[in-house]
Length: 111
Image 1 (tube, one colour):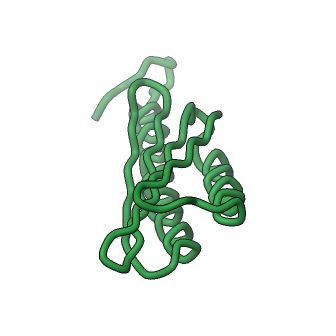
Image 2 (cartoon, helix red, strand yellow):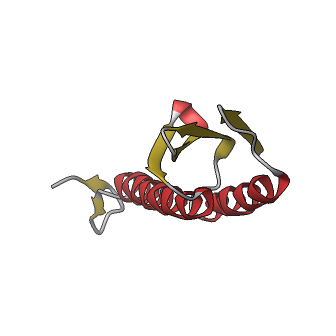
């Protein structure tokens, strides 16, 4: 998995970059088919904007963004949003796989 951090109109220091790497790296606990995570930090009008784009298998892309005065708080908020998206997606795919019921002969019967 590759994590790419980009700063627009702001230089992302090593402390913030390490914090982003740590938090974004934990997203694989919720969905293990993640290939790339792109983090964009932007500074505009005395506020920071943070956007995280997660690319996974089968062209699945998950995006979350938020804005506020502190980057560390934004990282936590955006990662929480992505955790919810990834959990929901994983539950949908898992439930969709097993939506049929079997009868006594072993054949799948749909309702």
